Length: 344
Length: 114
Image (cartoon, rainbow over all chains, first blue to last red; front, side, top):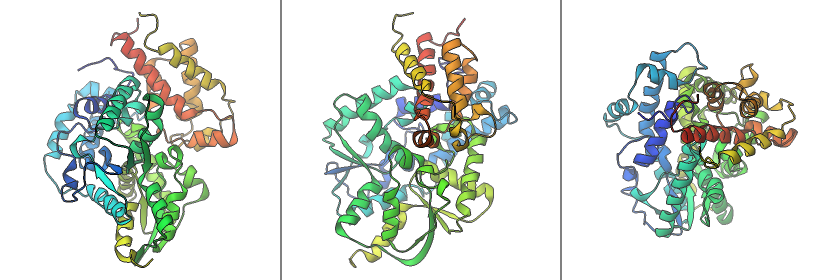
């Protein structure tokens, strides 16, 4: 194995780097990522291009990867939590790729890609002309940037821009906060002549709901609390949009966390910056803390819109042993639009 | 070594001048989710560690890497600094410091610094 970055960049991060550069996704799998869209008849070219990202499309592999990295952590040291997992990998020589391969070959039904279908369905119901690149969709490469591989990130970004241009992509709607932030904020700084308009799913939905004055309606009343993903609230400044959307949905009661734990001050779920791959225990403590904060609102459901947050919150819920549910906002919206779409 | 080292010097300058604006108020520490008592578990300590390492060679790369990668890059500290203090780009500097470490390791080509 290449040890250029030994002791400098944690092994978990170099694994993700190699996956992105070799396989074009963060989990290093070769499986088809566009399987979820096969019945949706999305055209390849449209006004807006739907950017699904690695998160939801391949999240079924994430559990396996995190599990492998955590096991390695336990085998290697377990005691000193401030030591990077990288050292543990070095000591026991764990082959992450092998373990991931084994875990994922079990072939379970995929609960995560449902969110993507929900998001597409919501946008369609709101009259957005939507396309999707299927297997051509590249990886935005944002983990490269946060793990320190700037040169690789820029190279990947330039390649992606060429690809977008050749496919005639003009406007992108992203569902994953990190990918959207990467395409919207980082690409223009690093790629010459980048002129693609990028919006997050929630921005588009809020805009469309405002313009058409549609009031989505839920059949059953739901009590939710909203967890602001850091990439949305502090990287993309999207804090009012989700609240505006929620307030428009009839039958949706929102109970906000304390002032210093929501919006631009929302607490971290522990999934950012790839810290869960090098400091799993610390990351878990953050997840537990966030879940406890959200539990204090006494809501039944945690609504959020980031796959990494969802994964972390589920982990926290598992630890705290509570039965609060984590749902993506797109799922609630899809359900609500089903009922109230015509009752303007 | 090549003269330019692939933009290493510029990156170093960007980082150290970015840290200069910090007024050491430590408001950021209470905002940091990974802060559990040690200053180096928060943005303030991370920035200081980076500064000392780049300017005076204090601390090993391994130690610095551990501090930097424990950051979740959630930007809560940056928001706090923007509103209450000097507006130092804490998170961005931490990410840049990671990039600096990677760039330097790459320029070395995997060989340990003697």
